[in-house]
Image (cartoon, rainbow, N blue to C red; front, side):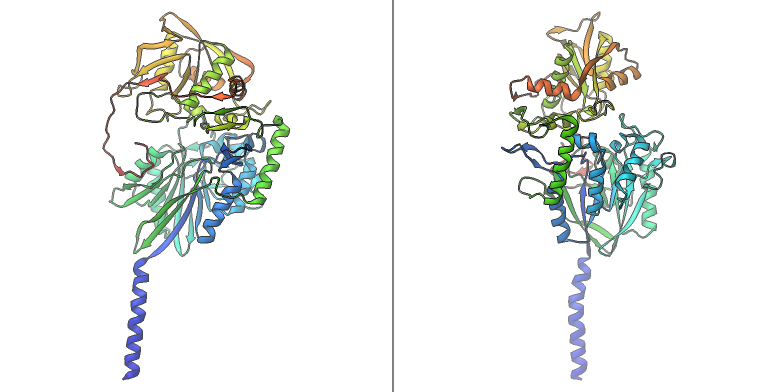
Length: 544
């Protein structure tokens, strides 16, 4: 009898300890990066020795190593755009950072639009070189015709991973309509909702307990997909360089919560998400942004590798790219406007446009958000900092980016250019204008192509002359795009050896060491502020 009582007591104690553990469920940890853009070295703000303090592979190695030591089964994911954006790409074409990703054990990466900057055949060659001793699974469920470029063995729609005993399905999406994407002959299906529905259903059928969309389509589309597609638990986003300090929580059609996250670009943060999985329900157990900043020590072997690569870059482009101070910014110069006022011109864009106009000695200059890769940090600047602002494009003869041209626009063509520029959702749109020698107002509440206030346009200090023809400086691709959109661009001629980078460098060097560009109302949105009902619960970092 005592033996039976002892057995019953032992059974009850066992149940008492077992039930809470089962009720607590299991957890899955996922580490996430996006839009790293060949930023192998730490960047600004720079310290007194001109060393970068934020990001870089060496500091990121330390942060990821610590996170994986804490949870060895954590998945490590990347939402795309590893390539392009720094001098490291222009010399090494992405091979070092891809090899680093292999060494760090990345579980998957989405194909970003900038992965196609070398073209699909160029991408295949880069991957073959980088993945000679191991691979990172590349995902893009909406990419087609991969066989032609030899990418069919390297890019797949999805994968199923085991993370600490939890089956996690991951699929990728690539932005299908970025105007600068050179994916042809690879096709990118624009029906993202249909593709996502099919992938989520397929992964669930294969046994996935958690379904993750590794997205490179931008925050607005991520939120729309979360609201439209059942079966997705988490969307790790990229493409538009948004920093979400907390997850955005969206209700799916069936009423389940979908978490949407972005940790921001350029290795400044690592996102760390912990999910609870219990009886078929996936919920948020914790999220944090792990800073990759001045308090993080660089991993010595990776730091040595980066220094060796920097020496190779200076061998190609000249000494001092990373160590010669060419000026100092009095404040951060963001690429996009900040605040809630009407000004829609941004400090970095104004600086770049002023540099173009000075290089071309023209009435005005024009560039757009899609041709600017990032802003400028407060403090001392070296040439490499300026290159990163205008890093897109690749000139085979020099290794620089886009060449500048001088051209003429009639008053009618100028108005058409501005209307095209402000026809999108706002300053984050790829063709949103950044101008010099020019001011104008527009009303974003009006229909596209009827937004610019003609009476507000000033070229220099004078109103727009309906019969006038104005000289402009812009990069060669902008001029081509305008022509393809039926804007008549006249008298196009290259500006000798002037490239976006060399023009910006010369302009900053000629400013006497002080860089003080700011938003000043060159472009103003005169629409009344509108309050749009939210379809999701906002995290602290979601733009309002």
